[in-house]
Image (cartoon, rainbow, N blue to C red; front, top):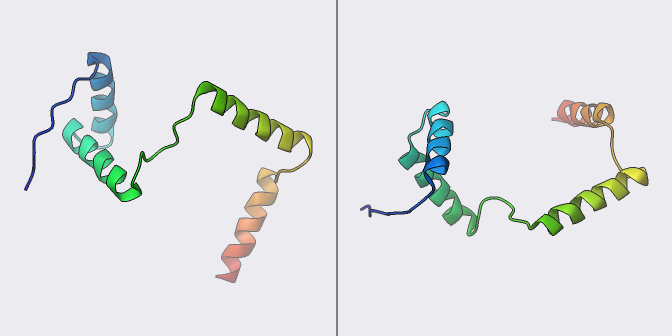
Length: 88
């Protein structure tokens, strides 16, 4: 059983979303159905929602970690992944 959902969105948003879905081989309706299914699966919005302040706080934390040497280089990360893959 299905139901009809009517929503109002800005024309520009609908146009841009439709183009993106089209590139993925989807129509707008299918894209929205996938989004709603993901909301149900995750029991919430399937992406992080943050204010500008929240994003700036995350950037500051990342900056501090880098300044303190608390990070793994891309080269080292690739080596760690390769090492784990060999154990499988």
